[in-house]
Image (cartoon, rainbow, N blue to C red; front, top):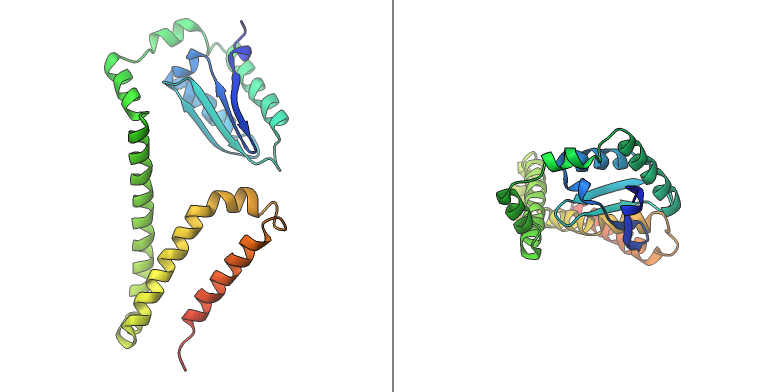
Length: 205
């Protein structure tokens, strides 16, 4: 069976497709190479190879690259790699992970482990954003001295806005922007939120 026929669609939704892939992609070098090549396709913004599960997940913008175009370019990439000998079984077998590496891979793919890792990443991003806002706030210490209550409220509002943007970023870029009329109520809520934010920053008379 050709390597192309071993890529089987297991899940497909708007802007997201997941393939069951051959064991050759469990090789780290092959997985890294195919990830880099797929990432260069116009419209693709996320590529993940789950080596232990033999799965390939691709997220893309339907408005830029539809599924048919994505599949055509994906199979072209696979064909080129196959012709270059990247999928030869001998090369893959030489790079098989050790028992320890396999156990570590299984541990990393546990639902609880993935959840903890995602939450840890989110916490780091939120902490970094808080540090940035704090530094910006410290540039105007007179505001904190003159009206500490307003300065603290402004700081918390900035944190809330950053969190909401981060929480809805995927929907904003992939759904709200391409279809603004359909999501007009969401945009009204966004504009109203920024109106309140700007209004709260106006100095009191």
